[in-house]
Image (cartoon, rainbow, N blue to C red; front, side, top):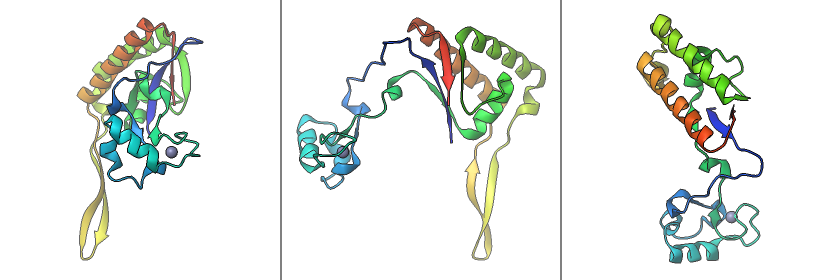
Length: 178
Ligand SMILES: [Zn+2]
């Protein structure tokens, strides 16, 4: 499970929906359409999707096009579970699963995190991790999790800081995560 950080919209505002067809997905109810992945990109293809869709589908309303979660159009950063654990620890925020706070306060957390990165960064690094499993006579990797080094942590703090700047310019005052 990953953690997504996303600005809290002022009341009454909404995220802009994308104009590009590329940002939409086809609805599962239209799966019998020939090559739905290709159809999504053209007006004609969308008509074929509609013909193959379930007219009573609660997800797409029979259009065959999944409108998706509007929050997907919001500026955000997303951290995988392992990275979120390291980064929230670095930020000094206890509850990484879900929370909300003023952008000014998050900026202070980032400053402290940068200081901690300088003083004890290497000790916070998470190494690459491989889970092994037995396959026949051999022991082989089952899953590989990429680690997080100081440079990676710094990059993620940078992108969080950019997100905060963008959030403020959109009129947001708080940042939430879940
Ligand atoms: Zn549908």
